[in-house]
View 1 (cartoon, helix red, strand yellow):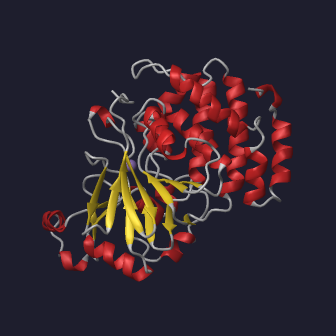
View 2 (cartoon, rainbow, N blue to C red):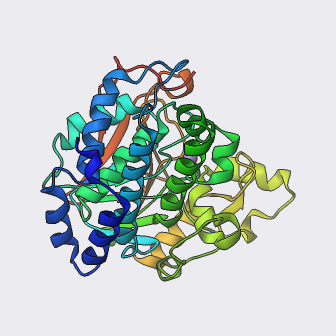
View 3 (cartoon, rainbow, N blue to C red):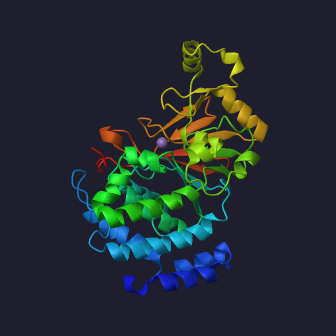
Length: 368
Ligand SMILES: [Mn+2]
């Protein structure tokens, strides 16, 4: 691992040159350079996974070489910034596509996914869409994020990373990711690393369209926007999504809900359910909305779409369907918070959605 080769000057020069490259040329340059930061990171995280410590006492990637790690992260940030500049907040992709739900710092499950779905990077054939929540809860959020950033850089037109509600500074301050960075890398580097990874999160798309017909997002549908066009126009960098874009915030946080539950909440809030267009206050989250089948069908019809695939909730089997299979929930972090839920993903291919459950029985929980 020739980390010494990386210095800020060479990183900047490289970037200047790369701005003029197409995504494909870019990919060739980065993938075949074995000393690129992305290739180094993938290998380092793979090595690290055998020595990651325990939930009670986790190790950090390159914990003893913080300065070198910082240089690598700067380089990763520069590369991924160029790629994300070309992605709208609603990013269009095509099948065949594997779709993964929440990861939450579960490095063992991430490697189970690697083993089952892409094995080698650069992978060929399918696309890979991650629905967010890479950090918080699990103890290896930083390593999961670094691996996924590097994966994105090495396969820029194959890998799409969406933002989840945990890719937000305030949430991470209340949960575990900020503390994780400070504990692993100390006050000085820990804070710098935390902030720089968040600057990348700020630029991630918030939703994706597969084959122009499947709407994919971390939480679900926005109440504040009814058309895909509005989502495409959301500004590229959202430092404080709650303040800067209501639609983006709602996409990160919403949940689907059954009609019965919807009616109960409407009753509780003294609202006429017929006047709500299928959206009601998300009482479970304390922010954003719940959407029922009416809300979902209105959005699908208006935009010529067929399905919704989202994450954000933990089904025991790793997946569940809503609204007569029009909407799916997918979760890719097993043993979540000490539960025995499974890790699953969805393959979209040949106009079919196929659920794949991963064998993660022998993996341990990434959380207490
Ligand atoms: Mn979530």
